[in-house]
Image: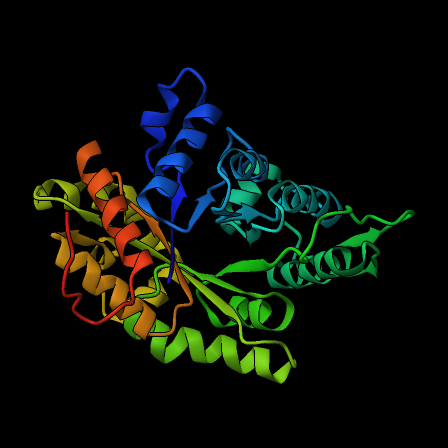
Length: 324
């Protein structure tokens, strides 16, 4: 069973560190010690997620690393391929590249990019990236993107080929993930949505394209805590804006959730263990946990320890022996 955590779990706490990269690597060491199988890095405007993933993999042998997720704007697939292959070679095959489109308004306001058909750009970006990661060569003259290599762009040691997952919630992104990538990072897809919509949709497109069964690295939120009301309030504050984004709103509606915080497991060990079981039964191949810092630091450590224990043992619907 593959269970990981998205880092940093608390950007406010991280900003108080003397060296945020060392702090992140220290958290990866804690995750590995707790028995978690992977560490995923979000991309913001501070550290570079791919670089930190490569450094963490070198410092913490055995743990898998990935990005969840790197926005494709304003990057070019040739540059991102260089980074991803370097991280794969540095990690000796333990790196996964998660990419996403980011929000339309954010891309327009931040980078001034207003003319791209977004799904077309995603598909062309994935086409170019796939060619680069497979062969080190690309020759694409698309509607939104030009990508041509003058020299081979393969990094020796970057094997197996870097797997690519797409942050996805709706039909168009799931189609791109199924046809052009290795799987998806479903966001705000509850167990019912995962089982009835997300997994069947991406699998249909992958099968039609003759691709292997896709990885489903579901982004899930939860924390073990006795302060349920306080943690719920913090989850509502940090996640509220997701409910205003059409694709995420549609995912919440499919699940019958009014607020994104409704999908967060907040409570005792059994509640979190049941959530883990429900997502795997719904078709997730792995889980990426977020919102583990909405309780106290002690709550977060308990959460990581429980998730690590669950990752090490055979999953049943009601684990017989779950410790704090």
